[in-house]
Image (cartoon, rainbow, N blue to C red; front, side, top):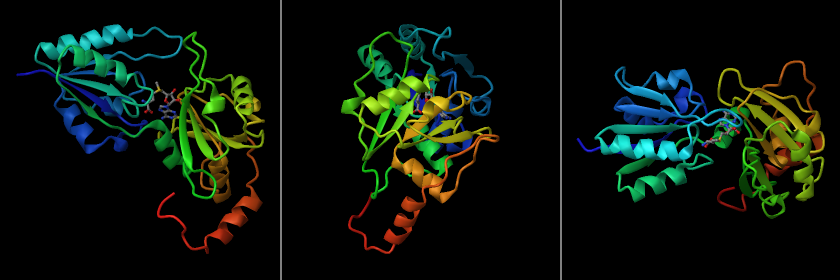
Length: 273
Ligand SMILES: C[S@@+](CC[C@H](N)C(=O)[O-])C[C@H]1O[C@@H](n2cnc3c(N)ncnc32)[C@H](O)[C@@H]1O
């Protein structure tokens, strides 16, 4: 049988967010090379005879080098195996899917990409934050605040705007630096932001604050991401999210909540947000 590689997104954690296609492919795998963040419930869906191998990369910890993962994918598929490269979220969002595609293409290995629910989208649904909202946010920017590499980060001034929702993946715990970077990029310090820890999992925690108060935020368990922008204030106003126990939360923005409830009577000016 001809070998093939499937780059499969497993979603943000809740096994029910796996797609039907991902499940079908996982159930037929000979071998699963998976990320660190893939939970046991999802791994248990692979057939009993499949070989499971954790190739996860975590900041500051020992991991399989990307070149070795690429070469494993090529070697295993060349020997006729159905290889599932199972990644958290979506394979093409901060998942090094691009590097694996290049390696598979140049080795002429057949491959297929199965999208998954990226963490930003999973966290938004789980916290009832609409990532775009035609009143306050007309763009969505996905950033990473990775500190694993020495290269200087992107210039956020070109990426961040008060009319956009910014979701920061791998935000780390240096909230003081993140807050400073966001303010230097042009955001006001009273811009709302929300930390979502272990989104979509039973142990999910959410902490609401502002860009200016971010340095005082708690270090919630990884993985976390940070949603920055006026849309975070709307989640607060809707009062629809879990609050970390024992922590104070920001008061809802009465003015914005009132403003929005009044605007609901206005006719739609656009088809979609
Ligand atoms: C290497 S990136 C991979 C992103 C993934 N490909 C995706 O589309 O979601 C890992 C980062 O995604 C975010 N992340 C993944 N799962 C998460 C979850 N359940 N809750 C919060 N953040 C999560 C965290 O910022 C984590 O550090």
